[in-house]
Length: 77
Image (tube, rainbow, N blue to C red; front, side, top):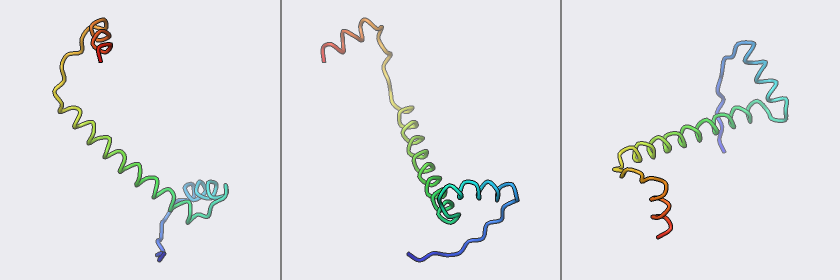
């Protein structure tokens, strides 16, 4: 896999936090790649959830019956 060098500027506080996390067993490069991947996956999943919620919101839904009636209807299935 071909890789490219990317420069990221961090203030000393953020650099310290990055070093702390990386000290748990990953290189800084591995950590950054993993964080980018997770962020991307969360964004894609969030967009899918939003689209699903919008589709649900557009559905025509009947009024939910009273609990006893709902129980009766479900028992008939």
